[in-house]
Length: 127
Image (cartoon, rainbow, N blue to C red; front, side, top):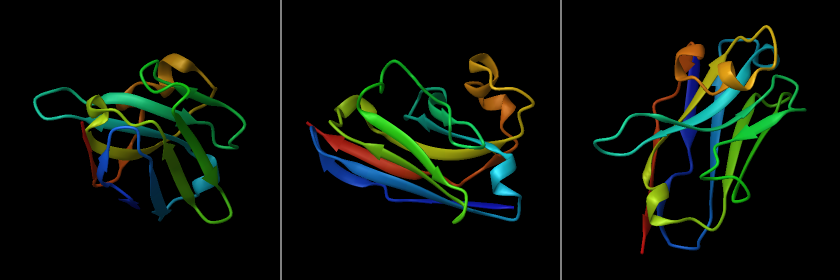
């Protein structure tokens, strides 16, 4: 199983970035997907999640209205469109895949519920 994240970089506050995650080695459309991030010295935190069909999404309050998660089950890809970026969004961003029996906010926002992780892509937002 491989999750390959890309698209990170250095951007000024107010700018945009689009992260992508290409998944191989698993039946992508059976997995709920999520984005998490981890800043230096901080714990990994939930950013956004999407159900296996793509019909349900959920966001952390800190990114709601600025970030959009999406997926293409035909291409086995997961995206995160990030707009109006702020310096506090600076972190390594990780994509993750998990098997969920139901759509549940509590389970989909827990990093422990995801069994497969990408290597992370760095996002740095300058002020």
